[in-house]
Length: 160
Image (cartoon, rainbow, N blue to C red; front, side, top):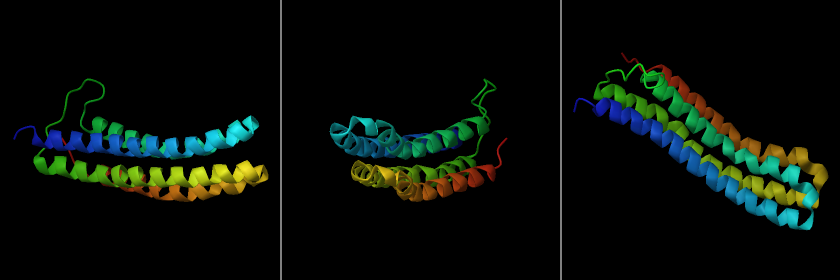
């Protein structure tokens, strides 16, 4: 029981990085399939396809960022040693990680699908690149809101 708080906090950090990362991998894979199809017709569209394929990767970065914030809050970065946490503090940190873990996972997949549709659009109308970026960027909004929610919740947890 003495390490339950630390275990819960680390589980939250792992969920943030893992679920958001899995969502990003799926989203990038979906967009990459569409990009490969477009580039078989016109290899010169590589740059445009790459930009749109990369968009779903941000959620994985957001999840990793929250994991680093948690590790820093716990004193595990820099070799200082972990702070003592109650199970309640650990649970609060775990809860703080859930917004980006869940929303990051889910939004990255949908952003990948939207990016794939946008890639198909530029395959037919390359001049529509600006519009093609805006569509998946709209999905990104919710990942950013989840990131901010996780940061604000994490900042509110008192440790040490």
